Image (cartoon, rainbow, N blue to C red; front, side, top):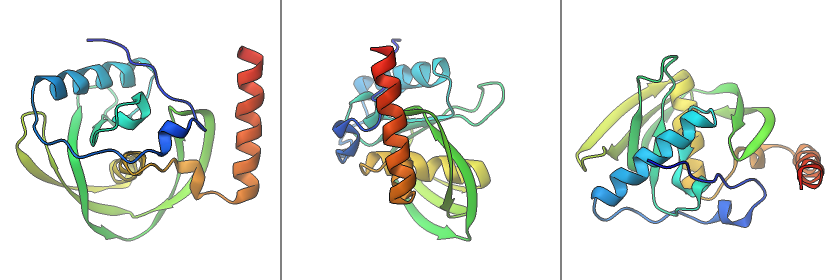
Length: 167
């Protein structure tokens, strides 16, 4: 396994729409393993392939406390959305920024697992938020883009200043 570099907002590659995975093979399983290692090391609870500059529809999520609940979703599709919740979100591509975003409270998702087998999951709460957040990445959208233009402008300025300091 290998740690992968995570793209930082506002990198334009974060806005590329990911292509569907045609065949789940050893390359896709290696990508899942590398993404999981990268997510845990960061540390985070979700990572989309887009964030590591691989534009394929692959997501890894683990909201467990002990890193025992790794879930891989290949070609995920939200089938149903229900309710509404406001949750504070962060993102490995937008380090140090946490903002409230409105999402569906419950979602039903269809995807392929790491062996290419189809499955559905009904998620609510944090898992539902995480799934929606990561699928947004696959569609080229970053959570801060749900915010007002004023907040987004402040975040971009903060990140640009931080990048100048660390460069």
